[in-house]
Amino acid sequence: MNNILIFQNRPGIGDCIIFLSAIHEIARKNQGAKIFLVTKKRSKARELLKDDPYIKNILYSDENEKRHKIKVLKYLYLWKDLHKIKFIKSYIFHHSFGHYFLCKILNIKHIFHYGFIKKNENICKKIYISILKWLNIKNYNSSAKIFLEKIQKNNKNNLIIGIGSSGLSRRWDMKNFVKLINLINKKKYNFYIVAGKNESEEAKILIKKLKRKVKIKSLCSKKIYEILTYIKNSKLYIGTDSAFMHISAALGVKSFGLFGDTPTNYAEYSKKIFPIIPLGYSSITHKSNAMSKISAEHVYSKIKKFI
Image (cartoon, rainbow, N blue to C red; front, side, top):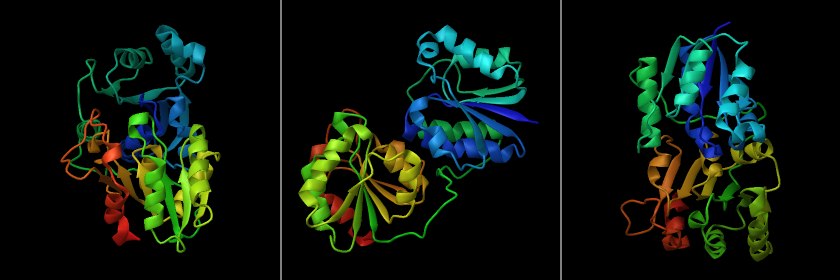
């Protein structure tokens, strides 16, 4: 059987999704090949891609923390996991000598990779350009897709509210979420809060302030795979630039992301993500620190025609 080895080394859930369309394109252009994806545990790839028809073999390079701490051991254990499998091609989605050398030791003849010297590049453009070059194609659809076997009928009365973030500078104050939800037709919609388990307390605060007026529920304690169904059966995602924004878009849900401290180029890969930046700003960088300058009224003005 033709086996293909893919390395996606960035750790986040959002990162996993940003690379997803490229991995799917590799699979489509190598019909009949068995895809082996090596990624990080934090990507939650095994849950996100549980029903994926293209990717069935997922290895976490950092599954054993002791292995991961010492780089030499990390590559040694990867070799141990992979050396009995015959790979015809490998694709390395980062700048790495270590993974390139590993592919050489595994006797993989065709190795496609970013190179050895890391550069300051637009992550989405780099993925897209690399796939065009590696697969010798003119274009492809860069919008990610998460597959789900069990899909209920889309409920137009469900809205996803994303309060999570990977850093304090990306958070949007709870009072803004309260104000935004109050601006939306409260009686018409069911609101579902998505964020990490460590943000469950923030979700409780939001519910406490709105529960008497709004049908609202937290999904923070649920597993990723279970949350996927809730999102798929919703009308919109509204919230921070977070993993759940990317998940929503990959499930085909219009996703309005609040960008006050991250560049909007992280959303360029998907036609389902609609970035919202503060009024008066033409662009946002990692140092903008402008989440507090995005008002609930401004967000509502961007989403009202869709609700």
